[in-house]
Image (cartoon, rainbow, N blue to C red):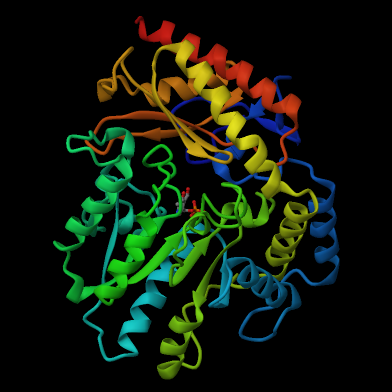
Length: 441
Ligand SMILES: Cc1ncc(COP(=O)(O)O)c(C=O)c1O
C-alpha cells in the first residue's frame, strides 16, 4: 500500500481490521491482546453492543447541531451525569474532542476566573515534573517532560513545576514515610513558586504516560488543596487517563478527601468509541467567571457534539450496568499482585506501581533501582518485543524525571474477562523474558 499518512511510529505497524473485547485482529491473521486499552482509552473493550447501538441511534437522530445555534439533549444530559459523578460542588461542563483540548479549555477558564476578579496578572501555570497534559501548544507547555516539547522549543516555553510523588525514588533518611516526605516536599516546593502570577496548578489524577503511573500518596491532594487555597491558586485535576473508572472510582482524586476547582477528562468518558473530552468547573469557579462573562466563547466547531455526547452517555451506562467500578476495585488488587509476581521472576522490573486497572512496570538494571542507559531506548524496544508477543502495552519513556527511566503501562479494558486477563499476564511474562534476553543481561 502506498505511504499516505505521516508515520506515527518508526516501527512498521500491523493493519487492524477487526476488534472484539480485549482483542484486535490484524490483516496478517494475528490477534493482539489490548493490555493497555490502546492509550488507556478503549476502556470498554471493542465491539460492545451497547456502544454500537448508541452510535447507530444517535446517528439517526441528530449527528451535528452547532452549539451556538441549537441546544442538544445528549450534551445537556451528559453534563448533568458527569457533574453528579464528580460530587457536591461541581456544576457546568463543556465537551470537546479530546484531552489536549480539555486541558487548553481548563487553562482558559482558570485565567478567566482570575481576570474576572481584576487579577489578569495571574496567567502562569504549574505542573508536575514529570507529567503529560497533551500535545497542543498550550497543553505542551504544561507537560513537564522535555522530550515532548524539545523539538518545538521556539513555539513553547516551560512552565513552573513541582515534583510528582514518585515514592519509589524517595529514600527515607529520617524515619518519615515516603508519603510524608512527598507531602513535605510539595509544601517546600510551593514556597518557591511565583504564586502571585500563577492561575492554577495542573496535576494528573494518577500520573500516566510520563511518569509511568504515579499514584499520589495519602495526604498529597489534601495538601495540594490547602496550598492552593492559601496562595490563591486554582487546582485543575487532569483525569484524562485516570477518570471514568480506571482506578475503581469515577475520578482518581476521589480516593482523597480533597476536590479540585476544575476537572478535565477524555479517553474513558466514551470508552474509546468517540473522540470526546470535557471540562467541568466547580460552582465556586463558575460563580466567579459568570460575574464578568455570561458566556464562554472559547469553543470549537465540535464543542458539545451530539454524537460524541450520546456515546459518552452510553459509556456511563455500561460502566454502571456492568458494575465496572466494583470489578476494578475487586480484581485490580489481584492484578497488581500478579504483575508483581511476574515482575519478580523477570528480574528487570525494579518497581510495580499503580492502582485499580492502571499499573506501571519500571524496567531497571537487574537487582537495582538503577534505570537503563537512555541511549538503549529500552522502552521502545520493550513495546516492540511485547507486540511480537502480540501484546499491546503503553510506553512511559524517561519516567524517572532525570532524563532516564523506562516503564510499560498495563491497563486492560475495565470489562476484560478473566480469560483475557490471564492471556494478558501470560503474554507479558513471555515479553519480559524476551526483553531481558534482548538486553543480554
Ligand atoms: C493526563 C493526560 N492529559 C492529556 C492528554 C491528552 O489527551 P489527547 O491525546 O486526547 O489530546 C493525555 C493523553 O494521553 C493524558 O494522558
